[in-house]
Every structure is written in C-alpha cells, then in structure tokens.
Length: 189
Image 1 (cartoon, rainbow, N blue to C red):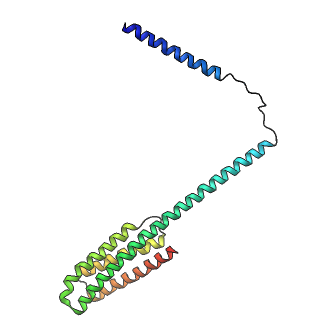
Image 2: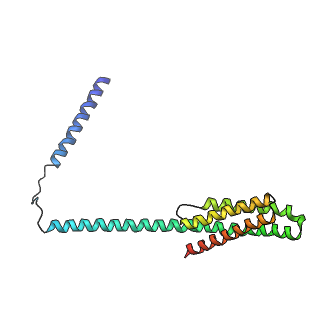
Image 3: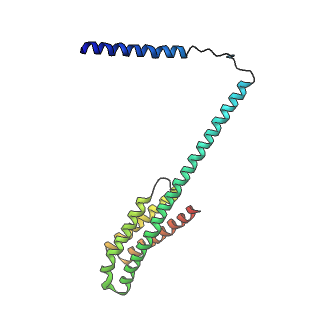
C-alpha cells in the first residue's frame, strides 16, 4: 500500500506541474497590437527625460549626503567642545586651589595636589576621547594641544616641579585652553 500511495503522490505532482506549465503557455500566447518602432521625435525627449531624472537624483543624493556630513560635524563639535568647556573649567578650578594652597598655605598642598592632578587627567581623557574625524584639523589640533598641556601640568604637579617649570606648563595650558575654546566658538558659528 505504501508504494501505491507514493506513486499516486508522484503522479499528482507531475500532473500539477504540467497544469501549471500549461497555464503559463496559455497566458503567454496573447498577442498585442501595435508598432514596435519608436516615433522619431520621442527618442530625444525620452533621453532628455532620463538624463534630467538622473541629474536630479544625483543632486538630491548629494544634497542629502552634504546634509548628513554637516549634521555629523555639528554633533562632533558639540561633543568635543562641551567636553573641553566643562572639564577644563573643573581642572582649572582644581589647579587654582592647588596654586592658592602653594602660595598661602603649604600645609594644604598635599590635600589639593591629588584633586588637581585627577581633574587635569580626567579632562585630558575626556577631551581626547571626544575627538573625531568630522572635526576640522585646526579644532582637532587645538583640542589635542589642550590634552597635552593638561597632562603636562598634571605631571608637573605630581612631580613637584620647580616654580619655573610649573609656570611654563601653566602658560602652555592657558594658551591651549584659549585657542581650543576660541576655535570651538568659531565652529559654532
């Protein structure tokens, strides 16, 4: 009985396939009326239409890509400049506390040096981690200069550098901060 059932299924499958093929053949036998040639005046119009459509599509695609790039740049500027602005203010505040202790109360130097070093390194890490390709090379350079200067001052504090070396590191930090924040301001315009 199992063989007979398998033969019936095979025969039904073959019959179904033949019926489907017959429907395809019957469906494809309709002939349409008309002329297969192109009217002489229509071909240039068609080509012009296709060309215009392709140009419009390319222009639209280019505009969308430009808009996308501008959005990426704005987001990158915002991310980096906000990281620079907020973390540098905290770092400068901690360094000022350290300098104040150094100048007026040497007993507080040890208490203020650790937070100053931490704030400077935190700012350097935060800013370095925010730098990305959409930023202009000038802005990237100025942010990297801040990172280097912040690490330099942190090293000077941790290493108990002399006054001249410390002041030189602070001068670099102040210059780097001013340049980076000025370039951030310009990038927002």
